[in-house]
Image (cartoon, rainbow, N blue to C red):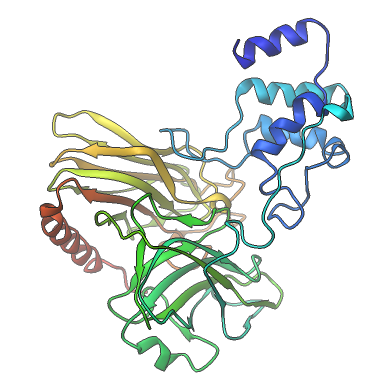
Amino acid sequence: MGLGIWLAAFWAAGAAPTFSHDVAPILYRECAACHRPGGVAPFPLLTYQDASKRAHLIATVTGKRYMPPWLPAAPKFQHERKLTAAEIALLARWAANAAPEGDPKQTPAPPKFPEGWQLGKPDYETEMRTTFDVPAEGPDLYQCFVMPGVPADRWVRALDIRPGNTKAVHHALLFQDTTGTARQRDRGSGYTCFGTPGFLPARGLGGWTPGAVPFQAPEGLPELLHGRADLVLQVHYHPSGKPERDQTRLALYFTNQKPQFRIMDVPLGSNHIDIPPGDAAYKVEDHFTVPVDVLVYAISPHAHYVCKDMLGYAVLPDGTRRMLLHIPDWNFDWQQQYTYPTPVRLPAGTRLEMEYTYDNSAANSRNPYHPPRRIVWGPASTDEMAGLHIEVRPEESDDEEELSQALWGKMMRQLGTMPRR
C-alpha cells in the first residue's frame, strides 16, 4: 500500500498523526542532518520538545517547499532532499491537531552523526595560517590563503570546507599550486586574488557554497593532489555590516584507487549582464556543442540574489531536448553540485544550452536593493553572475584531446569578451 493511500485510510479512521509514530521518522530522515546540535541549522529537531514548539513553523516551511532545501524541479538526482505531498500533508495535520506526542516508546532512536566533520575523521586536516579580518563595510574581498599540502601524490575522493564565519564567507574554492607562486605572494595573511588565484595551471579540487554538502568525487574519479604542491584557498568575503573574523578549515579524504578516466568541465556562462531596475524577466544564455560522445556526471549552477529561473538542457542532433537541470526558484543560500543517478549519455553534435532568468523587480523578496537598482555582472554579492558547470567525460578515451581543444577554444572566446570594470 502506498504512503498516500495509507495516510488517507489512517486519517479517515479519525486518528491524528503523532510525533512518535509519524513525524519523528520524517524529521530524522530529511531534517536531522542539519537540525541537530552542532549542525548548520539554527535549532535542533531531534526531540518531541524541540519539534512540538515549532510544529506550525515546520508545517509552513514544508508546505511552501522552502524546507527541506532542495532546488531542482527536474530531473532526478542523487541524494534528493524532498518530502512527498502526503508527508507535507501529514506535518500540516499534526500541527493543526496541537502536535500530539503519542506513545514515547514508539519514537525511533534519533540518528547518530559523527562529531566534527560530516564525513567523519579526515585523512588530512589543515586551516588558514591566521585569522582574517573582514571590515564592516566596503566592497567584497577575494583573498587567497596558502596552506601546506602533502609530501607525496594522493588521490582525493572527498573534501569538506568549514568556514570559520558563515556571516562573512560568500563562497570558497580550493586549488593546488605546483609552481610556488602563491607561496611567494602570501606573507601570512593571504593576498588579493579576484578571478583566478594568480597562478597557472590553477588545478581546482572543489569548494564550498552556502547550503552545500561536502564534495565527493563520482565513483572511480578521484582528483590527484600533487605531492609538495601548496593548497590555496580562495575565499570570497562579503561585509556583513559589522567587523567579522574568519579562519576557514579544510578536510581531505584520500583513496588508493586511481581514476578510471578523465572528467572535464564544460563551463556555460555569461558576463553580459545588465539588468534594468524593474525588469522581472531578464534572460542570459550560453551554449556549447560537444564534438564527441560524452557521459554527463554532475552539474553545478551559480548566480547571486536576483536570479529566479535556471534551465540547463541538451538538444540532441535529432532535435530531441533533454533536461539536465531546472530550478524554478533559485535561492543563493542553498546552492550545490548535483549528481545524476547514472551518467547521462549524449552523442557527438549535442548542443548544451543554458538559460537563466533574473527578476530585478520590487516583487522579488531576495532583491538586495529596495527600491531596485541597475544590476550588472560583477564579483560582489549585490552584482550578478551566470554560471553552469557540466561535468563530462568522453565516452572513448581517444576523444579526450578533441574535447579538450574545443573547451579551450570556448574559454579563450569567452575571456575575449569579459567586460572591463
